[in-house]
Amino acid sequence: MADEVVMKWPQEYLADKELTPRDAVLVFTHDPKFDEPAIRAALATDAGYIGALGSRRTQRDRLDRLSEGGIDKASLERIIAPCGLDIGARTAEETAVSILAEIIGRGTGRFGQPLSETTNAIHTPRTTAPLGGG
Image (cartoon, rainbow, N blue to C red; front, side, top):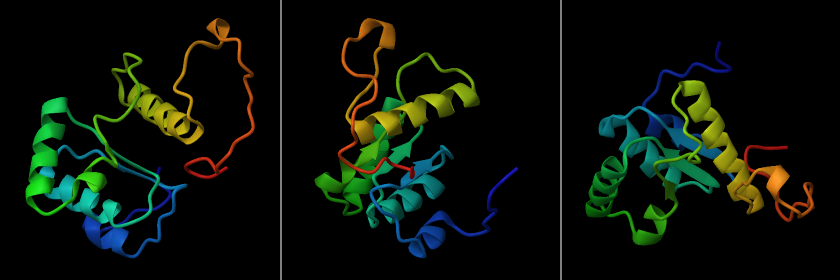
């Protein structure tokens, strides 16, 4: 089930979108011919989270290629990869949870500990709008 099915190259699709700091762009193909144009297009927006899957080596290689292609250091630092929190995720569903948890954490400035081990308030006022809406 999909909310929307699009038959365009990622950079063409993103060219028509006005993304804000509340939006997230996630790149999951593991293929540079798709990933890198999508990342370049995402970097041209105000998206609050730009994440990509892949190993640390894949990310180093990706950053090298993007840098050689003219992307500046500040823009490269916006790319979160490998994305997600280290919760031992193995399945696609678990990986999705780890990525969504990271997006929430970056939006709130809190990156997670078991609530049973913390003493601070569970619900604190947000100083900014959460990524992804809400």
